[in-house]
Length: 137
Image (cartoon, rainbow, N blue to C red; front, side, top):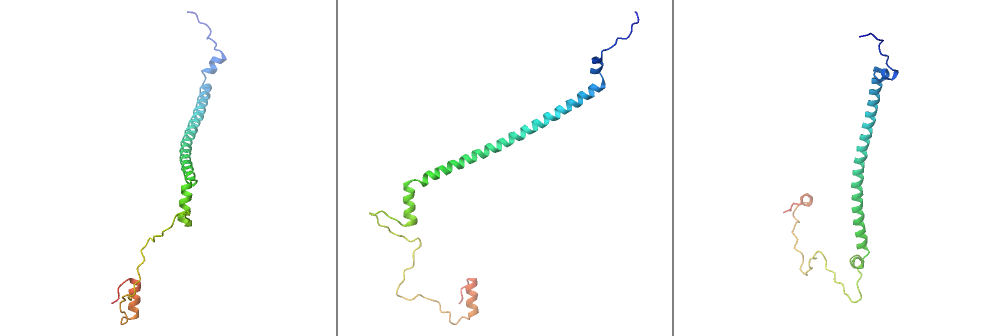
């Protein structure tokens, strides 16, 4: 065995195995991972916003369809005729209109209405019965 001079290592070999390079590589790796995390987070936010907007589009399309149906209904001749009959009281020339009241009116007769004789009840008692819906005797 002969003693030889220790091998001289090249600059690149010593640089790649130095602590400075390892620290720089770790800092760069952390920077890349943080940037990747931000991109992934932003992508998730955009995807959630996309789902919300798609739901809103679906809702607006449904409202648009409903409005189109209403417009089509409003433009029909049958609806115009029905509205003119009910709101304006119009009729066709060969028709006669019969009005039926929704509440039946009492029939007036020639006999006088029966009223309770409250002549002997005091005025404050009458007011008490009026405000509290109590029959005054």
